[in-house]
Amino acid sequence: MACSLWLEQFILSAIVMLIISPKITAQQPTYRYHICTNTSTFTPNSAFPKNLNATLSSLLSNATLSNGFYNTSSGALQGPDAANGLFLCRGDISSSLCQICVKASCENIITLCPNQKEAIIWYDECMLRYSNRSIFADMEEQPGVYLWNINNASNPSQFNEALGDLMGSLENKAVGSSKFFATEDVSLTTFSRLYGLVQCTPDIFPLDCRTCLANCVREIPSCCNGKQGGRVYKPSCNIRFEVAPFYTEASQPPPSPSTNATPPSSPSPSPPPATLTNSGGNRKISSETIITITVPAAVVFIIILSASCYCLLRRKEYQIANEGNGGNEISVVESLQFDLHSILAATCNFSEGNKIGEGGFGSVYKGTLHNGQMVAIKRQSESSGQGLEEFKNEVALVAKLQHRNLVRLLGFCAEEGEKILVYEFVSNKSLDYFLFDLEKQRQLDWLMRCKIIGGIARGLLYLHEDSRLRIIHRDLKASNVLLNEDMNPKIADFGMARICGVDQSQGNTNRIVGT
Image (cartoon, rainbow, N blue to C red):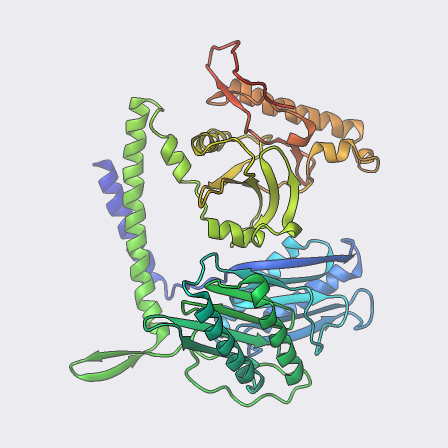
């Protein structure tokens, strides 16, 4: 009864909120990858970070005025502290989404590359880069990255033939356009099509654009052969193909190119109008109007659904509280699942460049989720003897542990034979990295060492006395103690941990574990 009354009040408040809100924006950019070039770094008090802030601010302020491309500089152009930056928005998106993407890029690139003088970040909707060297009007292909769809084409030979024809046509269309941008689709079978997109930065020459795109196409067999989708990102160009539509067709031809010294691209076209047919004839309603109508309705539906689920969850929690804790393990586990596609995208398909460690469980990779969050991803090796049920039990166990001196588990993935754990990213590696390195040892004065010892002790006390479950770690060592940016210790790796009874003071084990 009380939940029903609360639900009614919640829905009423939501409807009032929607009525008084003039518009709801549903579009958000999708992060894909970034690269920080470590050859040159800066210190916080130097001139470069000030110039970089000015450059990023200028890029953001021009995102809606630039027709999808803009470059700018702060500081002396040839000086070591110059900050040269540019962005390129996808040729089919609106100026408002371009601005949103540039804003996200400016914010995240500072976090992801905190002290590098050169960096680049890619989203589905835009690319942004900066450097202390000149990066304008020169075709550059490094650094680059490629990503691919994990699904295979049903008929690879037919698919590759159609893809080759599509990319050749797109290359010609892009070089011959004022925007250096082109989209096209071709037939695969009677019921399926293949969609493609290519784009160059409009500050390079047409011949350079053709060369850059051709080199991207040559990389497809290396990265994406027989895959249903793929993309190749380079600083001066990019290509993408999918078996599902992913771009918006332009409804009007692009205007003639600008005569500025740094050629901007043409204005981003609005999405095409959708045609509705009724008995009175045809009439057109813009995509913006459709979004304004459908998004609030969808939000109301989501709010109602969320509120209903909340009530059901509260009822379930009440039942569990009265029946004991034996039945909620599955719900804990299921709520933490990541899909394998997200993991592959976050780690660039477990690339060696993202590998940061290896242990008995398997390899550990640094990754970045679609929302920009940095994570540590542990991929179980084939030689590990842990089964799926043991793996899920470990997930359910670690998910219940919440303490500042324990590494926080964010989720897991168990698809296609993979067993993967996703943890918070701890920036300063493990304690052994400092203890056994002659240079790093100097950072550990006695106050720092006492701080680390105290943090480890607090984490163990929580496991042994204060957590809901009494847990023995059984593999505590320097490599399993991670240090965050403030050198606070976090105990990690609970693959060998064991749960004990509340009043249990001793126990037996069937196998020897630990180091």
